[in-house]
Image (cartoon, rainbow, N blue to C red; front, side, top):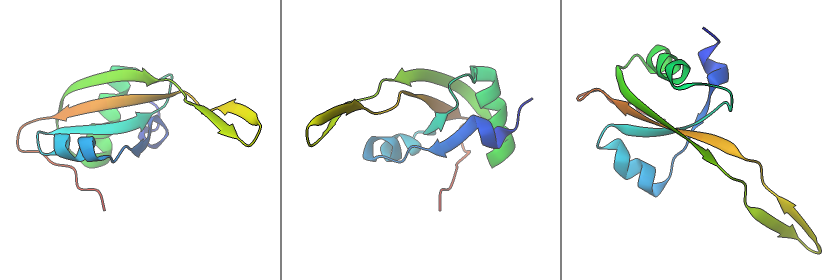
Length: 92
């Protein structure tokens, strides 16, 4: 297994994500090449919780403009991790 700290980049903390946290679902930004099994093992090892389900989706970059030049933000992968009932992850 690869290093879990290289698979899970950071948690995605948004208003919608915080509401889902009460239901046991947490959002993470993950490495593009990571599969669902690696994400599950990394979250279980890092946070000492039991993961029941992992959904993974590709988020496309947005068009941005700075003065006269147009650019694009990077594509990234978001994982929605569902925990066993009763488990929680606390972000400080």
